[in-house]
Length: 125
Image 1 (tube, one colour):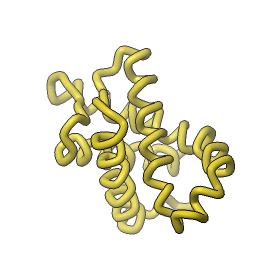
Image 2 (cartoon, one colour):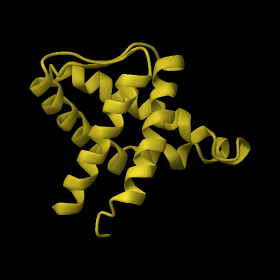
Image 3 (cartoon, one colour):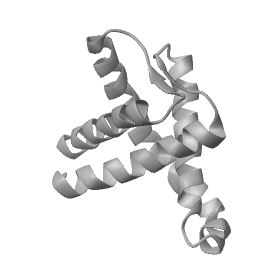
C-alpha cells in the first residue's frame, strides 16, 4: 500500500504543477479542497495508468515506433483527458479545457515532474 500512496502523492504534485504552468488545466475551490481534489485525481490517474494505459500503449505501438517514442505524450494526454472526464462525472473540480494545447502541455509537464520526483523519492519497488 505504501508504494501506491507515494505514487498518488507524486501524481498529485505533478498535476498541481501542471495547473500552475499550463493554461486550461484547472482545479477550483479552497486550498484544502484543492489538495483533496488533487489527491483523488492523482489516485484516479494512477489507476488509469495501471490498467488502461498499457492497453492503449499496446494498441498504439506502431505510432510509438514511428515517432520514436514521442507518441507517449499523446497517450499521456489522452489519459489526462480520461481523468478529466471521470473527475467531472465524480463531481471533482479538476478540468482540462482542450485536448491539443492543454492536455498535451499538461502531459509534458506531468511526465517530467513525475520522472523527477520518482528519481528523488523512490517508492520501494
